[in-house]
Amino acid sequence: MNDANGPPRLWDKGLPLDAAMHRFSVGDDPELDRRLLPFDALGSAAHARMLAHSHLMPAKDSQALVDALAGIAARARRGELGIDPAQEDCHTAIEQLLTQCVGDAGKSIHLGRSRNDQVILALRLYMREALLGITAQTAQLAEEFLKFAHAHADQVMPGYTHLRRAMPSSFAMWAGAFAAGLGEELRALQAVYARLDRCPLGAAAGFGVPLPLDREYLAGLLGFSGVQISPTDVMNSRGRHELALVNALASIGLVLEKFLWDVALYSMPEFGFLGLPDAFTTGSSIMPQKRNPDVVELARARCRELRGHAVMLQELAGGLPSSYHRDFQLSKKPLFAALDTAHELLAVLARLVPGLKVDAGRARDACSDELYAAHEANRLAQQGVPFRDAYQRVAQQLQDGTFKPDRTALKSNHVGGLGNLGLETMAAENTQAQRWITATRERNDQCEKDIWTKKIGGE
Image (cartoon, rainbow, N blue to C red):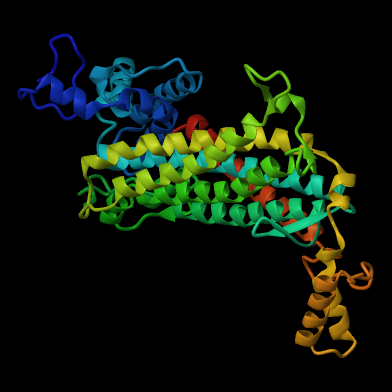
């Protein structure tokens, strides 16, 4: 039963309601749903246009709803709208505002949809925009790694396996690895976007609506490439698409975690290859000489935090039968938290990378003769010595203390090697990703502009 002075709930039929149960079931939704308000308003405006187009609502009512929703969306973008706990979610808050603004037409906005497909649409629009933002940040960070690689193209450093010096490397090869890794993640993010690029509205509670809805028209209004065909799959995909996005964020974290570990190691005085800018370190409360790499350590932890959000989403979305279940409500918190974490992580690292200081002398001095053992074995093999014999000959020289390699004899000129890092190819792929971001944003922005500004009449 509704509170005496409270607004009506969309699902309420006047039956008794335990107050503690209600608080428990609503949970954090009034606060979490604030970020969905502009997307729910946009989806509702497209839905109102579709109802007029399908002759299920008078054009004048649809226009009144769109105009009111434009104001609601603008206020929500400015952070001026809240959701009262009694309203439970963004859907109720918007419908009540519409009814206050346009009267009975506001009561008709829910025709042909359920809160189930309504929230999936709002989430999909939100994820679509957030994913484009994360993709742009990822491309920017990859660009910073490429700039670093070009700036230190000829500066050698040891390459490590098992945390032991192994073979010659360079600062360019090291930084290029992270640019290449982020390039792979850019392609993965575009694949996740393709999963999100289908309109769920019209599924209602998972079984469709016995009305002549034009789902394809609605999908086109919102800039989707098509319709998510099966209404039941729309419900089944709740949590699955969120998990795909958060797994992509966690994979970006796996790339960056190795970089952060390397920075923590290489900036130690015992290595001394890298220096952190003072602005990216903090001091000790007891030891006057200390400058601590807190940002590196916290960013490293944030990478693990992303994996934690992915695990939470997997647990919440898994283990359920078909169709909608209230468990899905809890999937919003780890989704939002993961996106916030990724945004902050990428933003701070885009500032850190260009501030790293290279001590080329320390790194060069660490490239001792034994790092060229494999090179010498390969040089002998090119002269006709069987590789295994060459390997044994070099190993014996190392044990005897007589190993003196010709450091300039061989250079790896294959793609990716020290003599052919492929940085230009990485840069071209990064540019292509940035163009995709720009084109996709422009298309979505134009669709939103058309929803708000095109007049409805005779559709």
